[in-house]
Image (cartoon, rainbow, N blue to C red; front, side, top):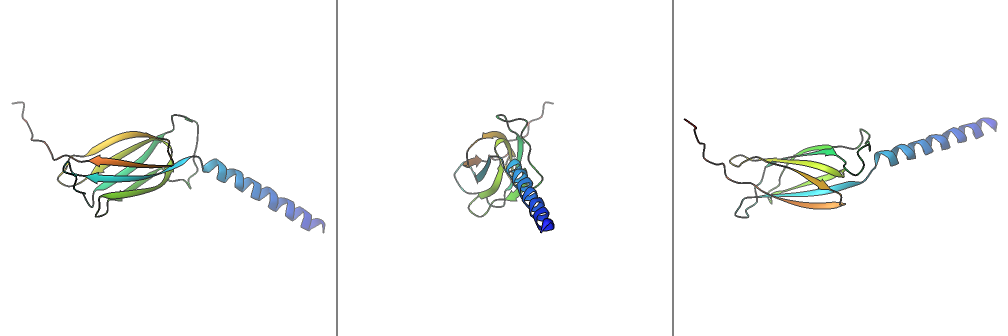
Length: 131
């Protein structure tokens, strides 16, 4: 009977520690939906979208465990949409590359549960020579 009580106590302590570590790792997150289009409003499919969590301005000392992903690389679908699963809230860098278009990069401060971001890719500019 004594061994069962000791085992039960160890089990309860382990579960409490696990719950604390999950709560520590599960800070506020946001789900992003990034839409990539041309200046004319046409969707750009197969554009490369890179999303990186940079920092959390409200809580700079906040840490996330390895179970929380802070970087995503994906491609847009035929409608020009890339859906990013839960990423920590804070400053998020979004980079978009597509063949035949200028590269896009911008840092957004995101503190919402869900956010939709529209990206417009421009045609490449003419090259100029200084000589």
